[in-house]
Length: 306
Image (tube, rainbow, N blue to C red; front, side, top):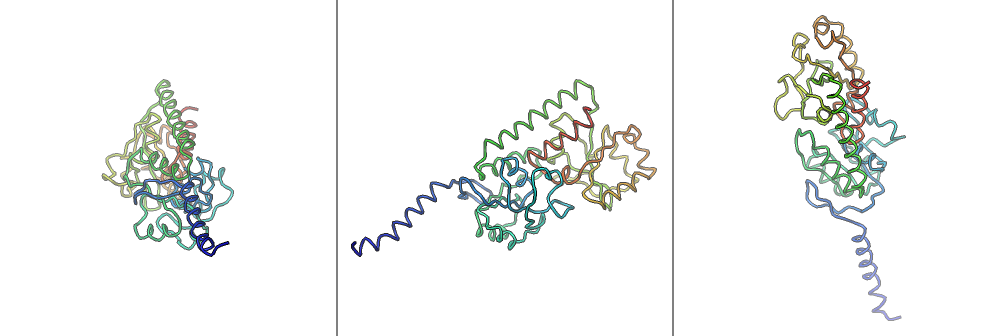
């Protein structure tokens, strides 16, 4: 065998490897421009609650995730979809070393990921960041579809979103036919006081899709997710046909239990009519994605369409 042929072998092997990689990768348009991603990623890390939800809806079980707000693990509504998962950070503080230890071939990140974190993470694996859209009810669908493209599971996620839309429309029709009162306010109860949640969030968007008229009492500033904490004396601002009260953890639950004993709370018309509904704050005020949407619709169906 000639020496020249031997010298060409490493070059030929490199070219074959590059061609094989190109054949098994596709480009995904992200907030940071096009990113090349394997068509069937096997080791996925999610750094956003909506990314974790979407991956599970697509039939992919990630290796790592960040904690939910107010908790030290992922949101409780996902218990039935996960046995265990590595925690690689909290909502706004990612443990880069923990991500690296999972040896991911794809990272699905939050629209709020900082440029500094992106620069580090993208050196570990292709990192997909959706464009930031602010508080827009339907933004979760575009985020989910982008994550789905990165996972190579677009059909699964499109179907999951369509299922949510069909079910919400059916519920809206049933609510109208039964003459159910439709005014609704969502409040997250914190130790420092109740926060009225924006009508433009993921969860309040699901309420609207199911036929409810979501109110915020004029208390939520534009481009904000919630109001400042309310005093008990101002609780009349959140009186409505239905009041959904979300707590993130035991501290919030204790604060809510204390408020329920106050005269100001007892005077609310919604309390008198027994239309105050306690809900999981990890789901109703933090999560997003097709599975979260179905879980919220489950809660609504039990309460409004028993």
